[in-house]
Length: 285
Image 1 (cartoon, rainbow, N blue to C red):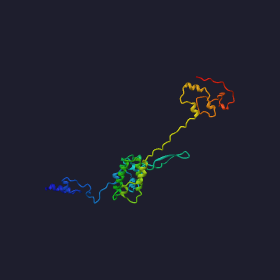
Image 2: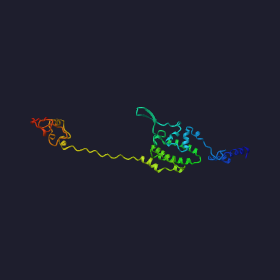
Image 3: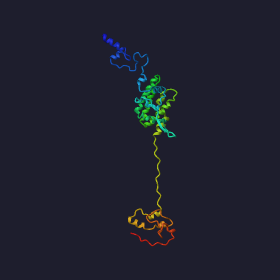
Image 4: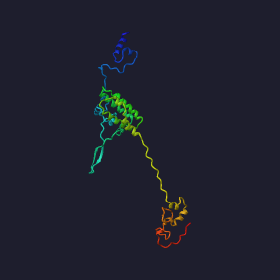
């Protein structure tokens, strides 16, 4: 072997992860090997360099697993300032207007404006996983939280996105009460939360059937004196005649004839008439 080839193999042999012979014949190196001068540990990126858009308070809260799940939108790169509490204008009893802090919107509704779909959720969630793993290198954070992300993607294919976010908020609140970190708890779906926040809201019950409206039948007197269809000539003739049903003891519910006394043509029925008989009125044709 020539001196040049010997020097080359010696130099290549100093590279970590592969032997000089493997490099010469083109075999791939070991991408998981420790780099030179690693002192037995892998190098890590500082969170402030890896995610320069994050505020220090968010990094501290994530490291303690105290980051509010409704603030997930703060982890997106477009958010570079701390969210401000919404204000409401309230008019006091003396007519004085003042601004007060509005009540926070519960559950997933507060997330919809900043995390409107699964793509935005994945982007923010990967920042969360990166920060938490960087703060706890000895914990299998990536295992549990990556499995949880797979669960979120799966249920997002079936249920509405607001319901998925509502489930996420409840799940994060449940994990914050764990006594210790267990990746299996993150990988498993909670049946109770699944039923409460996903299954039940997706069930839409049909509205109660409205009973049909039954119109009461017309009185016999009305059906007898008011035909369903009559000509204009017949209606004119009937308009000049007193109604015998109205003058009788039964009465009339409404017809085309005149509701006047058939004796004196006064504004009273014949049963209450005391006047003389009126001359007969010839029928008009």
